[in-house]
Image 1 (cartoon, one colour):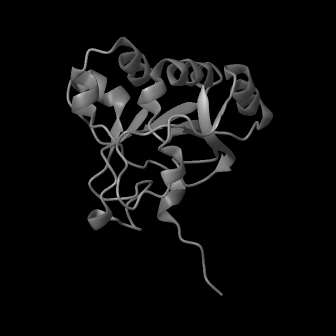
Image 2 (cartoon, rainbow, N blue to C red; image 1 turned 120 degrees about the vertical axis):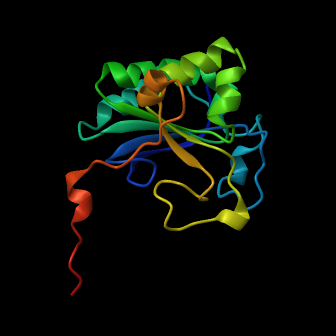
Image 3 (cartoon, rainbow, N blue to C red; image 1 turned 90 degrees about the vertical axis):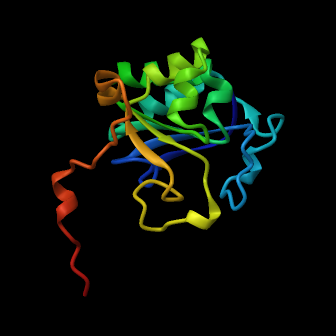
Length: 175
């Protein structure tokens, strides 16, 4: 798998503590992208799946795995394998993509289908600089959707993910 980097303990790429893997290579090249160093498919470095699986096992506090980029669907087979490993360990899986769910679902690509099947929440759509939002939960721009793929599969249409964390209603006092 070709990677740009990873973060072992992210709190901004989905709920809870997460291992975030940044894949290398992206065809979207969104203006204002915060990861332009991931665009070149020849950049980054090769990483064995076993190396990433070991990162999943290193931190017992992880809630999930986030696949980001670059574009994870350019390496969908490897990403799907890592996602299945994470799910087998009881972790949830979020995948960020510049494609829309509709495009991915209609493509008929078996590797894309495998990654979608192993993903719990899909953050879809390109980053749009003119729609940048610092208040859009877990997204860079407000056009991007947080799609609950488990509920979407049941409904046969996109169903948006909503935060159900009971602590999200509490605020931290300021001093």
